[in-house]
Image (cartoon, rainbow, N blue to C red; front, side, top):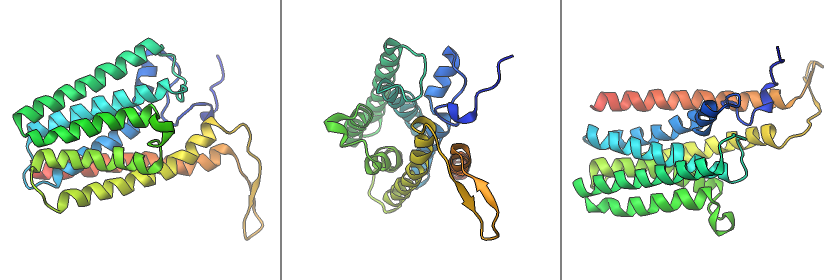
Length: 246
């Protein structure tokens, strides 16, 4: 029996062993997809009335656009997850999911309000510009990550529910933006340790003289532990808030 690979040989703490079906699961970045779909729930919960049908459509649209489309486009850019999915499959996943999200957005817009059109246009642009690193990567930054994957899902979900100007929606969107900055601050060094660190040496010397060897795994563990805990916490809090409102 082959020995298991060290944890940091995986490109992400949630990445599964290689395999076609497992590659599809890894491609979804499950903790992060759940994290950002939580913003959809939080945005809806900021509205005076939560319309279940609108919320369901918004969740499906963002799952397609972010959970599948954005991540498929990201994997096309240098294979950061190292999946065995072919370029043709990734292109098909990206195109089909993004077009599906647009179709849902247009259907909701026709049924609810034409004021949703700017959200559809901006959302499509953000998915393509961020993940394909258009304009020399100008939109592939921490700020744009927080705006695109934090503030935008919450703001869109709130507007679909409320269709009026109230302070609650933008405040929740700003909070989701800040949470996405925190996510990025944790995930970037963890990603560097997993994907771009060939060796790491050193030790921590305690005030009592105790010495502890530093390794990539020991440094990554608290970062990834916090990311995993936050992804679970956001799902529970957002689902709980919406459950109260429905």
